[in-house]
Image (tube, rainbow, N blue to C red; front, side):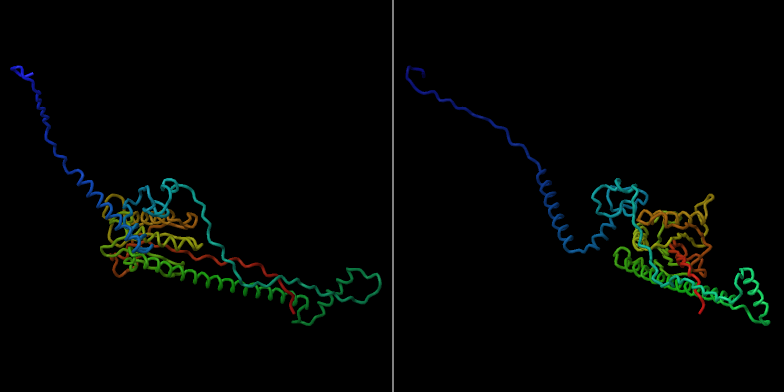
Length: 357
């Protein structure tokens, strides 16, 4: 009640003071920018997948392969050390060190016809008239007497027949051996020619290896099919003074292995250097360097799928077998050669002697 006795309402004014809102910052802008960038990268990736071929995508995957040659990776991109293919469904640690059984190529069946066995037909011995009770000893005496009565220079007909049979059998064996060797050499030469064409085509079709075609020398030599990886100025295959191959050399060896693994021939690997003395110091020389590079090449071939049993030899020749003898210090003399050795022709079946006409 108000003073003076007069009634009236009491007015209460309530004021609520609120603090000022703090500054929220720009974190949401960073998150939004990351989202927009991720969406742009996603759509760019989808466009690239649709605009490129399978071979180009494999080339891009090989380009981003790790440079550590001797290391094991968690993906298949580091072929040949990281796995068989970049598309492995599991980690490489599950199959990189496992023993794998691989079926080799079918044996070459020779279709050269060989004469079938012709049984020797013995001529019946004519019966001689003689007294009854004549024994075998008397028959032998008559045969000896008949031979003694032949004029000088005349041979026994039976001996002439035996010599004729031996001569016919020898001629048949010689003809069969020559035909088998000729057919085997023809087939092996054609197989080497196809392998050389496949290697050149595989390198030319790879965008990352096409420029290395001039550093790949494939030719047929008396020993077999020789594949050489040559160094070039400012484009070496191995580290200078070392045995570790670079990424291009590993990719080139992987392409070569895909073709070489189809043939049954044994393989010889050899390393070569130029005439420049080794500068590493110590007891090491060009012999050690060439042998180490050949052994690393052997390891790359086997890890890329080549059976170990097909390796015949691994040698280091230093500068003793120069590719360009007139320029002993040329870069092309630094090379690694992989030779598919010629096989011996199959052993022919024995041709039996046939009766002379």
